[in-house]
Image 1: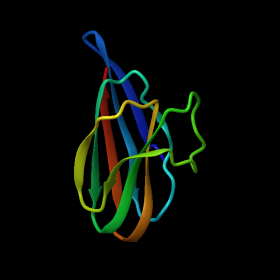
Image 2 (image 1 turned 180 degrees about the vertical axis):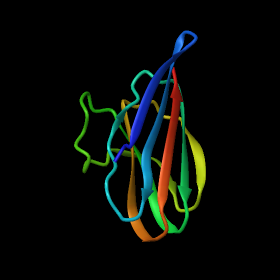
Image 3 (image 1 turned 120 degrees about the vertical axis):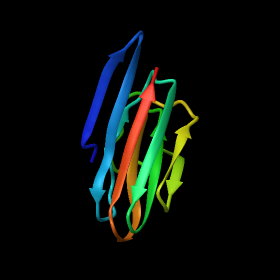
Length: 111
């Protein structure tokens, strides 16, 4: 579940900061957040144990159902980050495999 999404005006642009997953300790779907119009964005996944977190994108015109998985942007099995180099309308994180520990995923984007 997307815990927090914050859009703010900075100079002439918009910044989006979001916590896509927060200390999740099970498999499950995250929630889609609207990232349409953002030019540059990045993901930071923090895994404290053994899990696989998938970062997914969608170009559906309206918010997809949370159990819809769109297309792959990143896969994390260890703590790490990455740029989202494919423009898309929606982004979400979900835990596809879980053994132990927690998964937290942060999103940052600007237009």
